[in-house]
Amino acid sequence: MITVADASPLIFLGKIGQLGLIPMLFPGKPWVPASVREELLIPPISPAEEAALLEFLKSCQIVAVANPTHFAAALSKADNEVLTLAIRRKADLIFTDDRLLRQLALVEGIRPMGTLGILLRSLEKGFLTKSKTRKWIETLVQQHQFRISIEVYDATLQRIEDNRS
Image 1 (tube, rainbow, N blue to C red):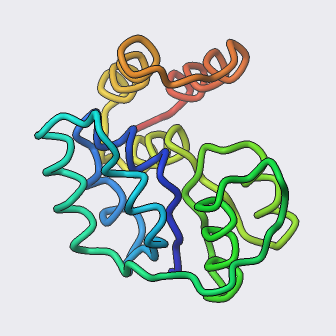
Image 2: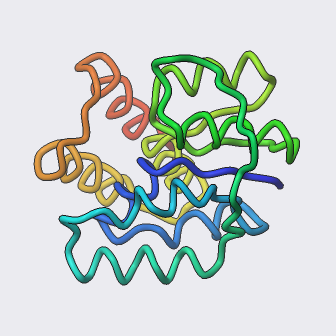
């Protein structure tokens, strides 16, 4: 499976110490644009979080994206590079929480998956319990400025409760 990672899911999973879920769920080395790597390590960042991200990045393909396509003015340089790299590598999946990047990925035939999707997939596969999944989501929202609508929050909690794992 070919995956390309944007910064936000890696940052948020790093904050809760759950970056290890990615290699458990998705075989192969994630592709990460060099601009995303830079975003990941911008201060302020705790030493523990920095160490976790650096360790995770060792298992990734870090690449400079030459001549990225400019898809939308509202996308950052890194987001444009993520989508460009995903198209060039014929990625199956983009890890991103960015709404516009998710929409553009779908238009290009690439499935997006964000932080919540990774946590929910981990629950479905039995890597997390319902209580741990709920705890991580609440921690992200309450302590780490993870922003989601009330509707998405409620729907996510309902999916956790409905899970048969």
